[in-house]
Image (cartoon, rainbow, N blue to C red):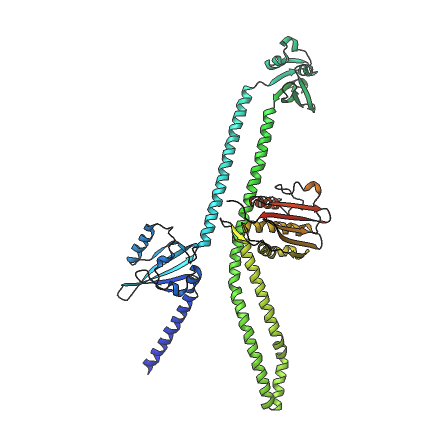
Length: 551
């Protein structure tokens, strides 16, 4: 009898652990596949079906090759089979194809399963979907490649600037500046050969002459002067010159004994300086835009991860609330029956005691309030899940290919994300028209909508209104965001899409939002228009073709 008891307990223990193991496999977040030694599928878990699109019955009996995409070399699979046929575990990454033809990446571990004699009887494959990670790696690589390209361009430009500087220094060595030494009263004492050539006078004709008269006779005119530094222009050639005056002082007394006048041609130098400044400004703008895009991409990846983590507990919270609601109804029904039974079968003393405890514990109030609390909790859980879903949709890193998207849905998800910026300052009105699917880069379009909505909220002082309208005009889809804010001065309207131009307070904006939005809309072959009136409000209208940007 003790032996039978132990056997029974052992059987229950094994059965219970098998049930737990089966539950773990069925609910595993990774795909699990078991094949025979020829690769014929004998078992798949639900995650495999969810990921590949093949039903359980469709997968059974098929060769694992049904997932081959044709993008992996034959030697890859040959090495796999050599490894597992030798009884070793194989780990690697597959580029596979789903039932609907979509390609995806999996990190896979394939282990041989042996019987007691060590003979391989099955293969166990545990697979993890790494498509998102691969896509993020590819986008990071592309971004790094782009940054390296920009760095190479900068390096070329810097080398060009360096060469230009060397050329300019060599040019200065070759050029002859006008050098004149004069007395304290401005009479020429000495000069170099260039002044004689330009003035067509002999040395004796120049000496003791007034230096300003000689220059004017040579065709120079003063355009600006502050006493020691002047600007000159040569009438005949229209070249610009800088004139600098340096005092010569006696070492012992510090008395001015003469002056040195240096006149150098600055025409080419000024043109070069302006060109370099323009190039520097353009590079700085490009660098900051790239930084902004990388920052948004990083925030997007972080937000997507947070949203994913929130979604998991929200799933079982919603499920638990549903179950709790059912339990609450059953308890209400039981308590009602119990109260009826007590009313008919219990004595007065027992009924009085029960009624006293029922009053003390507020049972009736709990029964009345519980359904409302559960309903409110379920509604709150659904709202959290909706916000999380919109956050995931909004913050997903841009894919390399375009997508067809409904801009009304894009607006809703973006509004949900920026709602905290809007709800305290404005009443939002949505007037959506029927829109066709638009071929676009949805996350870039979401960024445009986010910038326009946040700007509209920031433009409002106190409490105002924001209106979002959508519609179609022929082959063009229109989205308009209007606010009742402070408006934009007419003189600023032509500058608002320029990088770093902002009318916001210091620290409240970078001046890049509208510039980036403008570039995104232009890349979609669209246009962004603005109408504004001071103290009345502004309307920004985005117009993009439904067929999307080319290539």
